[in-house]
Image (cartoon, rainbow, N blue to C red; front, side, top):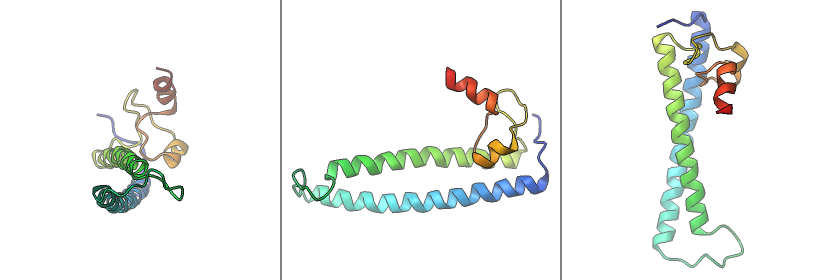
Length: 125
């Protein structure tokens, strides 16, 4: 396996960014989970909210929150995979063609595992 050409200080910068994003995501997931518990309690109480003009229905709020949890689970996986690449020395290398991923792309999307060319190619498929 080829190792990243990024400097040790750059790798540590990205590790810190990824860990910070992960911590924030874990906090968001905990908040969403608390909200899901509240919705579950309201749902189990069988309150009739279907005709309440003041806010979202229990079903729509449940759907929104579970969607957020599903998306954050995917983001958490991507962050963990990026941190593993930092640990194994492959962070910053395209997982498809093994060329370096541009610094601007990594700054914009630290979890990126494809260079811009491979990402464009994957999008068109």
